[in-house]
Length: 152
Image (cartoon, rainbow, N blue to C red):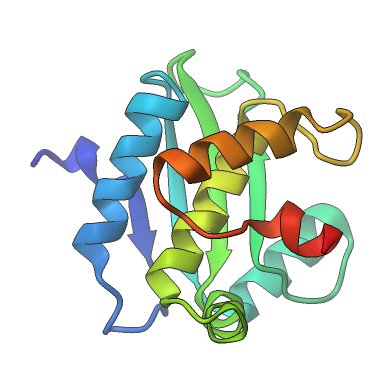
């Protein structure tokens, strides 16, 4: 595996996370959902998500996932979609609430964030993102995602 295959970065994330599983899932997302376009994903803690949320969105609280689309102005190749940040703390809490593993929850959050990087917005797109997320979750055998949880 080359260093380019390390899509997921871990900082202050639980040591017991199945990191190879999360790397494989990220590569699958890159290859299938993003059709080869790349992204990076940081799995970190609430403190870092709170800092990022405050710095970039003006919201002073931690959240589960943030998406930072690439504006194309940098030195990255045109096929770089952007970056995701996921809170392992939020993922662990949500996994317990939903009755599945933290890795499953991180996969759900990664898919959700990637769809945002692909330009989808569940708040404004009349269900397009929800339908896409549902199709991909079924393909990857993932339980209900963030959009369904809010609606139920």
